[in-house]
Length: 339
Image 1 (cartoon, rainbow, N blue to C red):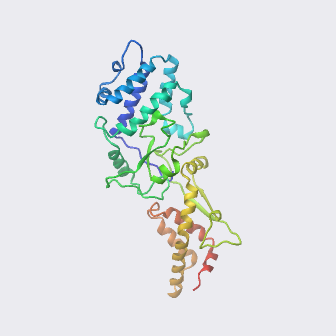
Image 2 (cartoon, one colour):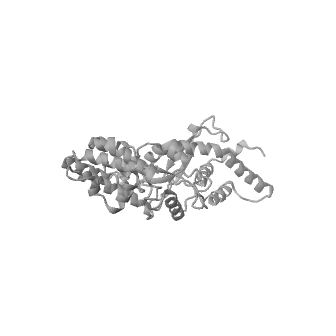
Image 3 (cartoon, rainbow, N blue to C red):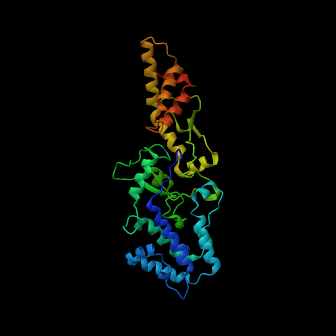
């Protein structure tokens, strides 16, 4: 992640508490001598009675859970706890419990209903708060204007009536117990969320990743280098002529790139703006020469780089700054322009 969000307190987190109550205190306590309603909290009973389809599904799962033994119940509770410790899972200090290691009722019955909690219940009156209100407060606190993951796309501000999609950072298909955990729900631009990440799992094969709400995260710096070759044309850079690297943790950077195709997208962006950036620099050189101002090539580049340090995550400035840092070491590109 280029940057992270600042987590906030909000009533919407209550839905996750309801889900935990349902899984750990209701379903995992099911017996032949009790009914589902015997274990429901007063708050959740309101939701339970509000929707007939929900009541029917909850009762059906309760009935199936009556056959669970104590070890299976303990395993479900453990999985709920561990698979919601999102930051530790991202850091690799905890290993997730896989669905296939749990009783079949979790994957076959609980999972579809818990996913529907996110798709249906969050914006209903029975649940405090809603996604748009949460989004607006989060964006107002964090003050991001561009996607914190890629920095390429503008995201909806708190002043609009719209919001970005919430990405299930740990995919809900594999982590249904975290389906309404807003520590696992990250507002990202459409390209990051749907076109690049999709259902990719940041914990797959022992990967570690940046936690999107990490309080001590240092914004990632991007470094660009251009490889010399006999056919190098600065006005028409090719994909293989640009190399991109990052500050930060190499293993987490690898996961970031895997999830969101960062290097490919940055490479494309650089090739899209490189010609115009070089034209701007050449025009400045030309104007200074006409005015007989004794500015060196390096001074002109340094001034441009300094300008890009203001609001650096606006208008791809973080990429343009790094590109100019590279160009500063390669004044030979000026030969492509004739004065």
